[in-house]
Structure formats: C-alpha cells, structure tokens
Amino acid sequence: MSSKIIKINLKNVKKFLPKRISKANKTHGGSALVIAGHEGMYGAAILAATAATRVGAGYVTLMTDLKKINTLKNPDFLTLNINSKINQNKFTAVAIGPGLGQKEIVYKKLLELKSFSKVVVDADALNVLAKKNVKLAKTWIVTPHTGELSRLLKISVKKINQDRKKYLMQACKKLNCHVLLKGHKTLVSDGKRIYEIQTGNKALAKAGTGDILTGMIVGFMAQGLDTLRATLLAATLHGKLADIWVRQGNDYLSLMASDLNLRLPKLIQKLRR
Image (cartoon, rainbow, N blue to C red):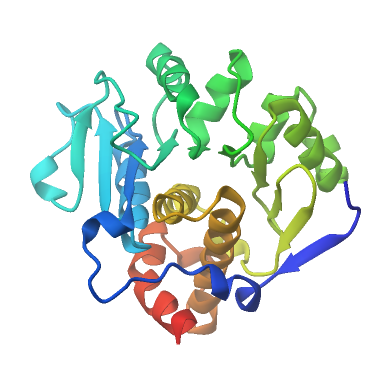
C-alpha cells in the first residue's frame, strides 16, 4: 500500500465523465438497479434512483415495496417488487440499501447479488452486513459514514475519527472491496491507494445526501465506469454541488438532498465544457 494520499478535484475526474455518440440510444447508458425504500423511508429510494437517472443511466429500475409507493408519480423509473428475483442479465450495476430497513429480505438480496461485479452497498444494507457474514467482491464498494464503519469494524467512532485513513484501509482488508468513508474530506480506497476528495462542505450533513451519492455512483457504474472511477467522479461532483450551493449565497443549514439532484445537470454540463 502506498502511504501517499492522492487529492482529487474536478480536474482529476473530468476525463471520467461518460460520453455519448450521436447515434446513441438508451441502451448505451446501461441499466441500473436501485434496491431501496421501506415504510417511512421511500424518499431515500426516490432520491437515489433520481440521481442515477440524472447522471446518465439509460434505464433505472427501482426495486421496492410496490404496494407502498406511487409509481404514477415517479414515471422516470421502471419498478420491481422487492420480493422479485434479480435477473443478472438485465442490470449492469446495482445499489442496495437506501431507506431499505434492516429486514431479512436485505440479507437475501445481498446473497442474490454475489455474482454481480458492480454493486454499491449503503445505509441499511451496511448495517445488515455488520451483523451477517456476506462475502463481497473486490469490485464492490461500501459507502459508510463513521457510525456505520464503527459497526462494520466493531471499533468506536472516537477511534475511527482519530485515524480515518488507518480504519479506511482496515475496512478494505476486512471486507475485501472498495470503501468510501463519508465525512469531512471524504476518503476513497481500492485497497491499494487512498484518495481524498477536495470538494464538499458541512451543508452535506443532512439526511438524504448520502442516498444521492449512492445513486450517482451506481448511475456512472451502469454506463461502464469501473468502481474506482465511478466513485471518484460521483464523490467529487457531489461535494462540488454543496460548494456551489453555498457560493450562490445559500446558508449551509438550508440545503436539502433534492437540491443536489436539481443542480446536477448544470454541473455536469459545465464539467463537460
């Protein structure tokens, strides 16, 4: 492992932004599956699925409890019932966890995904992972905040905050996959190198913003980016959206997660130019 910390900003990730040929159709954007949402938490599912669509995924399918969500009010997504089997040939990338609850079905879905190469594990799926033994692939990524990492490693939050880089690498080794550790100066590692995201601010300390990040990562993965590039691009753009929010004269306290999705199109266009 290299001890050097690689700092990442928009200039570093611009080259990762997916491109479309003139004759492209929706299949060129790939197909993302978002497994998310349960009673009282369906907003997390919508936020994540919207983000995946905003960053360019050709198809986004939301797998959730269809009895509890109004699909007519969310026409941008295909839908699947949470109890459906996952068709490996249908999806190029999967995200699991936002607002999903810590039910037995989450564990079953994690096991169903074992043959997939591109998977983002977040939120409630992380909490289930902390309790159950699930073997992850090296190409998967987990996206914990400090509390979730504490549960995964069985180490106190205080200790993690004293040396975030050390415990980031410990998580990579224990889980055998990529790790994104949220917080001030978000960290990403593929198990070999450590990357520090240079965008973002305290406006992101709000429920739902992590769901947006998960959706962005899976949306970029669906379009063909590998795990590391998709994660670095998504995390940098995600932080930049919060920086723009403050720079435009808005207060840190006022950002809502949905504000990020609304501002994504202009930021992506600016980066492409």
